[in-house]
Length: 403
Image 1 (cartoon, rainbow, N blue to C red):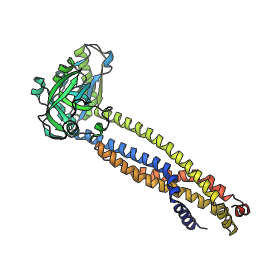
Image 2 (cartoon, rainbow, N blue to C red; image 1 turned 180 degrees about the vertical axis):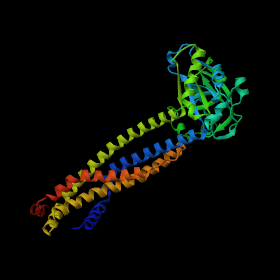
Image 3 (cartoon, helix red, strand yellow; image 1 turned 180 degrees about the horizontal axis):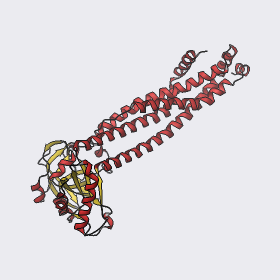
Image 4 (cartoon, rainbow, N blue to C red; image 1 turned 60 degrees about the horizontal axis):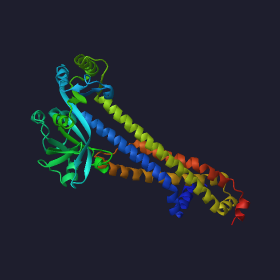
C-alpha cells in the first residue's frame, strides 16, 4: 500500500467515527486555541503599546523616588521641582503626576460604587498621553490654579454611570475617606482599554483625571509621586537623565534617592511582563496538549483492538508491517492536525473577541501558525507510534481468530 492509499484509508477511518474523532481532538483543540489566542493578544498588545509610544514622537523620562516607603519628607518630589527640571536646556515639557488609590465613584445606582484611581495632573499631561478626545476639553492651567473640582473620564465609565457618552457638564460623586465630593465632568476620552476594565471592576480601577491641586486637597498632601519629562534630543537621553538626577539631588540635598526611567525602558518592562504572561499561558496550554496527546494514544489503542480482525485480513492479503504502521500513524497525525487547524481558527476568533473588548487588533504571525501545525503533527507522531507499532506487530493468525 502506497502513501496515498494509506492516507485515504486513514481519512475514511477517522470520518467513520466523527464523534469519537472530535472528542479525541478536544484536548489538542483547547491547547492550540489557547496558544493562538494568547499569543495573538500578546502580539497585538505589544504593537498597540509601541504605536502609542511612537505617537508621542519624543523621548519620555519618568522621575520618581527609588523607594517612597523609606524616603524622608525632604526627599519627596514637590511642585517646585518642576521649575528645576524645566530649566534644563533639553527639556521642553514637564508634567507632575499624583496617582491616588482608594477612591470610589458613585454609579447609576446610588448604592453602588466603583473602585477608582484619581490621577492628578496639569494641562501638559495631554501632550504625553495621546488621548483620543470625544467630547469637551482637557484640564487647563486655570483649573490647576483654582483647585477646580473638574474631571476627565473615559466613554465607557460615562456609559457605566449615566448610560450615554456625552456627559460633559454632568456631575459625579467621588468618595474619598468616606466623604463624598462632587466633580463636574469637563471632558470625555476614548477608553484606551476598550471597556476591558469595566469587565473586571474589582481588579481594574476606573481612571479619573483631575487637577493635581484638587487631588492634593482631597488627600491633604503637597508632594507628587512622579514627574514626566519630554526630551527633545534622543541621543542625549542618558546624559540628560543623569543631569536631571543631579539637579534634584542638589535641590533636596540628598544622594541616590531618585530613579529615572525612559519610555523605552517602560515599554521593555511592559513587553517583558506580557512575554512572561504569554509564556505561562503557553505552558498551561502545553499541558493541555500533553493530555490531548495521551487521549489520542488511548483512542488509537482502542481502535487497534476494534480493528484487530481487519488487520489480520489485510496481513493475510499481503500487507506488510510497515503498511499497517504507516496507516495508523497517519490516522494519529490526521487527528492531531485537524485538531490543530480547528484550534487555530477558534483561537483567532477568540483573540478577535477579546481584542474588541480591549480595543486592540490581535496579530497572528505565520511563524506561530506554522509552529502550531508542526507541533500538532509532532504530537500525532509521538503519541501515535506506540499504537501503530502494536497494530503492526499483531500476529495475522491470532488476529483472524479475534472476535
